[in-house]
Amino acid sequence: MSKDTIITQELTKEDFVSDQMVKWCPGCGDHAILSSLEKVLPQLGKRKEDILVVSGIGCSSRFPYYVNTYGFHGIHGRALAIASGARVANPELSIWVASGDGDSMAIGGNHFIHAIRRNLDINLMLFNNEIYGLTKGQYSPTTPLGQTTKTSPFGTIEEPFVPGELCIGAQGTFFARVIDSDPKAMAELFLASAEHKGMSVVEILQNCVIFNNGAHNYLKDREHKADRQLWLEDGKPMIFGKENNKGLILNGTELEVVTIGENGITEEDILIHDSSTANPIIHLQLVRMKAPEFPVAFGVIRNVKKPSYEQLMVQQIEDVKAKSKIKCADDLFRSGTTWEVE
Image (tube, rainbow, N blue to C red; front, side):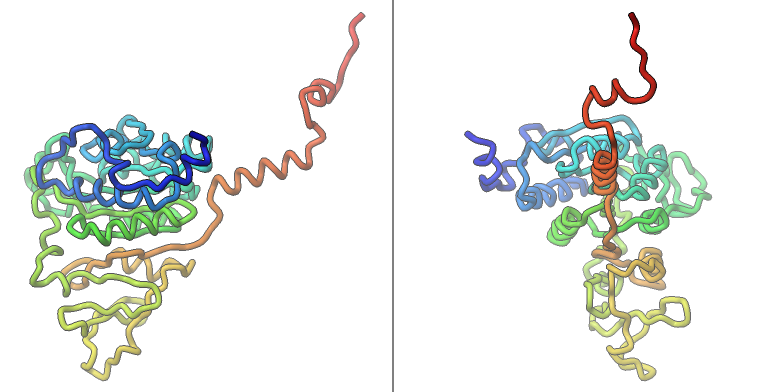
């Protein structure tokens, strides 16, 4: 079978299902993330051999075993360093990194901000369960202030990271957020991530049923989730609520929740979402919104076009080669000062 035949064959979700036993706990949000990615990979137009899944250490880091592609299970916090090397070595790969809130933003924090700053074309799936699950329940960089854990028996006194704020602050070009109980939306965001040329971060609010069960229940509650979740769509007003009558306006420099029909507020007063604007001010405010004062923002929050690292690298190499007087090894050997020895 020729390579062209392999490239053009139609792949399905089943082609990406590994023969390995999935060993996550029953009810873990990781199952939904895995299933969502398996649905997206056939839509990339890539051979399985041209897709790479990389991980560090943590429950999420079992991911490479469970996807039938090339995989690399790295050490704690180093998934993005490994993925960066793979990206530079082969700019044609589709690279997916599975990393938890501890793996990516604690021991892997430097790699996290610099991979984003460089804008490498990597898709990071950030599993945020607000706890260290694999090591049995220690507080993580995203654990809420005051929460009692095995390493904060009287409540953590550290302010948590907001992953979206950290991403945008590191000059990120793509950030999206979803919850593990919405696999359809998750698949759509993974596809948007894959289509983005540059570093993309998809934060998944994921439930750890053993060590932090119910961490995101406030947002999932069926009766109230319409009032607690704001789903963003480009070109559409930021409207939410059970009655679809609440929205966001800009009051001075701050976002404010208003009710349409009260105090003269109309739909035309509501902010329109624009993920593509280079100015990060509104995007930063959106990622920082939290309950109960605000709904939590979901969907693609930031999606800005900017040359990726490998695009600039390849172009630089071509430019240098075109200007260089050295075209082969003989040119190199005969360059500079030479001597003939008799």
